[in-house]
Length: 414
Image (tube, rainbow, N blue to C red):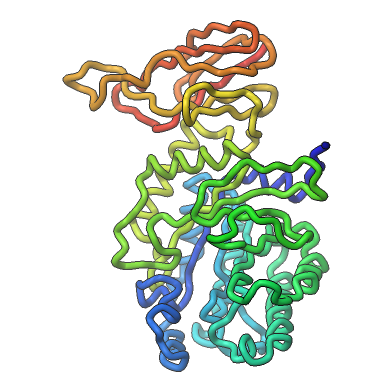
């Protein structure tokens, strides 16, 4: 069976490779995550008072985007409205529960889009489909769905060209509930024909295929699996979204951060199967990025600059790595070998380990005669032996003072 050809917008989305999620709203003031209203059982009228004390730094959006740029991120998904029903954009009279009503007319989504434009980052809009604030969500669902469509139409018609719409919340109603998805997506296509449409299937349905108008499947908080696209009616992209600690929104007491090594390996695992990696930050009450999150983003940017520039155009390769975790991508007629577990070359009195990761790395199904293999981080040429479609590369260790976690070797063919 044949594999469908991806539509232009989907092919471009796959090349983004690495995105940043921003969970920010009035809930950020509590420092207890974006679900604090529901989980802490805060009555709606009491929770609403958070809007009165909402105070967003003037340069918050600019700082988000600059941090993303520094990390090598190509697109940012901002929570324009989360489940608490508060909108960061001007709802033009649909509701008075939005940022302009409480921030002297400031439209945070407008500030975000302008910041993205200044840095060459593609803006995406997250929008909840469930709503804890609107009575109609429970009492008059048909009316609520019209409110939802009208809200999305504002986002699609008032902020210029956007990269896509990212929905979340359909899992909140029983299976079989009619969300009138076709009507919702038609609104997007009318105003933003090139926008990527995503609807998160949640923790319990990772990788599930939904409405035919969707452009990507999602893997929330879980490693993506290879996509089987043979015989499918449409080529779908894949995306994994993940938190840096245990919360999407700001958790002031959450110190359970993933290490930089883990994040680098997860980014690589996503690109191994052609999926994008959407890594979340949860700014604090005023929109400032937490120092730990800023540092982790900077570390990812350094790894990409030194080793991983091929993650954007690189496509999953048929080259098979014999050793666990290792894999290959292909781009522009070259292969890129992603090699894990290499350590620092040195003696036991100086280095942390014994250098056991150094040595031969084996790859099968290598088509074409190899001309040269070199590290992308320092250009060092590596010794190799090729026997038909089998390639053995002698992986040298990192020079003392460096360890990029996953090292990438570029393979040139004759």
